[in-house]
Image 1 (tube, rainbow, N blue to C red):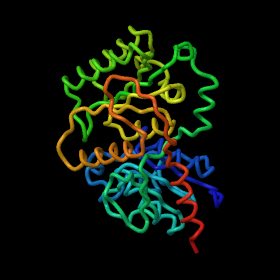
Image 2 (cartoon, rainbow, N blue to C red):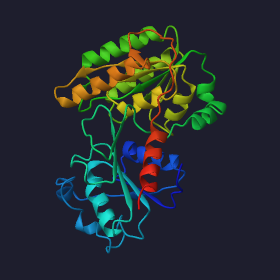
Image 3 (cartoon, helix red, strand yellow):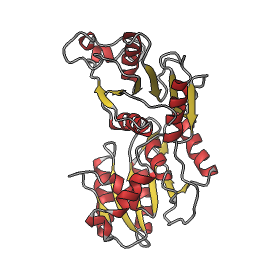
Length: 323
């Protein structure tokens, strides 16, 4: 990095995806961030991102998540964090450099720098757009995980295919027929590879049980939700991936490995968001990073796609250019 970052806050409402992306960018800057989590009451949350902060979180209140002293850099994500990021900027007397990850829905004025994925429409002089999302899975971290794999994964005979399962989202509607098609294709794939399955909190219970049961029945691994999520180890050990298209984050993390990524698309829902996610998948196909999942094991290579350091370098450059 071009500039040492003495102090960094990560400001979110605690959602794992939002907080993880912010922490990843902070770590890429060489910083150890201070985690600040907000929890506005429903009445105030309804007005966010356009309204103000919840009065209970005013900086003079005990336990306020935005009490000073204020950092050199504050990285935020999630619509509820937008008013709090504005408040941090004002409370610091304008001295805190503010960054927002993803579209804040309020235009470009509420942060000094905004990152969005390319499939979002927001653009401006302070907006950085990259194809894939930031995350914490650096080459160094993946190499360390490969060197010391969990025992129940290390014994699986290659090829090992990580199956990263999501669920219904604003873009996709995971219907019973989608689940049936997905399971049928996985059953064919399991003839040629060992499946390593992990599911998200959005995965329907019946689908989770079916996919985990299939992987175990075919000599693979299925995480049942107990204990620590083996997701990082799956990313490191997989020879290939099957990822459901509803999560741009999961797809972004998979293509950071340079391993084949086969994308399963459930039924699209209506609306602009469906067009955006289709653009994302098409762009990755054009890069040679992903292919549609058709029940077979694909073998191909491409340059790993990673954006985290690029985002961190943009922040460092913007801060270095300050008067």
